[in-house]
Length: 327
View (cartoon, rainbow, N blue to C red):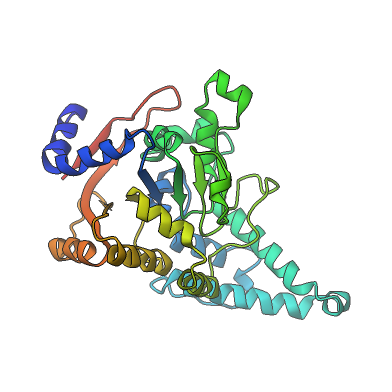
């Protein structure tokens, strides 16, 4: 099926939803929001959370600690086990000065961040121009991300930022880096467009480019984040879903804080709904598809639809890459 036929097929099946998102995007102050998870950048070589935990378990710093993880277990619980084993080993080997001046925890957190960073980017080329031809999704969204007030990125990496930088015109290169990165709640102090907000923390490719103080990657940090959201510390996210029509891509909807915020907003603002694309691998079928879609709408105000297939990117010189969906 050619690109034109695919677009016609998408419009015929999802015309109402596509037109609605298009209207929100073209308002004088765009109210279309993009929310991204690990699945959106998988084709670039960035791992899913499960794959990242598996890489960490097999790295030099961890593999000899004797921790066995279950590949079918929750990756966040597995990450916590690995961290606890690493922490215990570091405490045992630390110097007396580190104990006396309480530097142990700081060293553990800093070294753990380096471990996550090296395994996150182990398959990533530093040249963004070489990455884009492998990309099936993100590059086609860069224009939207550039022209919308804020994009929520639940990933740690800075691939979107590097794409935004590469997408600048000559005039823009003289005046701006092309984006603003945030991981705290001070979003209203920054420009209105090209803001990328990382609720789970930020770990750029060049680690000296000011990563966030913490990463929400372990079981305890997810629990703390959920508690914080209940106390209103994530009002930025709640406000974002209240005032925008959001398109969720590459997410498994397993993040408890995201589900908590979506549920509160669905209860308090039942007239505002969002769109969730579930990607199916080629040949994959989804059991109880209709029941799953109805549950997402009733509980979270999410209009869910499944798309199956692949896309082919065309590099930095092209526009929207041709899409190949079979539905």
